[in-house]
Length: 397
Image: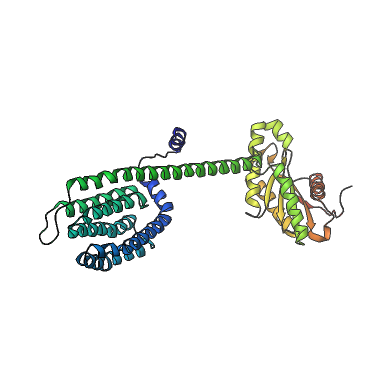
């Protein structure tokens, strides 16, 4: 018990009344609870109607009053309550309509007891007490409505039992019998409170478990994402690149589509590090990564750091012409960014390689990377700050 309450408190929950949690608790419990209350009312009404023969044994007047009041008042009220309980309505309204027919039935039983004017009065008092006990214990309404309904039933019972009414209502019911009904109801209230407290505790503990599970899943997703990101630049890392490229190449071959990659290298990066310092070099890598992400197709292409000053962009469904256009776009964007270098601004060289779907199904992701790397080498050998496409069609030896 202490462990449960400690866990609830850690999550900001309390077993005391809390409007927000109470609303959530009732929202979850409400539909099932209302169906159970409606079923209880039907069973309770059927039981009372089956006991009409007992009123006939007491006397014709008692039987007549019982028939008229039960069929004319209790039955319509019960059917209306059952109808409303199966429809959306405020919780207080559900609680009210659930107890109205029961309170009227309690009044009817006490009235019949006084009208009997005989030894049967004690039976009616016992029946009224059992009815109040049953509704207190078995009605699955919120406890605060249970208390109000029980108080209403006991008040009606006391009023009709102890007051001298004019007419032929018979003698008052003794105070001992009234006290018996009150005392008889107290254990039911206690048990009802204990049940709801246990149900609410179970609900809140389930909420804690649900929130803990969500926290764990969220943390795992965050850690998974972090494990796939490069710590410096914030783009995907080599681990993610290898897996993504293998998966996308497989899809391209299966769907007979092209896939291209850009192998990107920051020109003269070692010299930049040596002259401007590693801090400036890291800053340039961060900015290059940001520009690359902005220059590729958002939501389609993937940018990853290959290692050191090299990056790779995966371009699904991009043929040679489109890959060259994207490569030229990011090259111009880097040059336009104006990142200071020893001789002017930072530039990049780009090598492009294309896998042409099923026509080159013999190529592997490693072959594609090798082809792009060769094109990159040729771009750097040709003077850097340019984009060249590989003409390679055969797998690497």
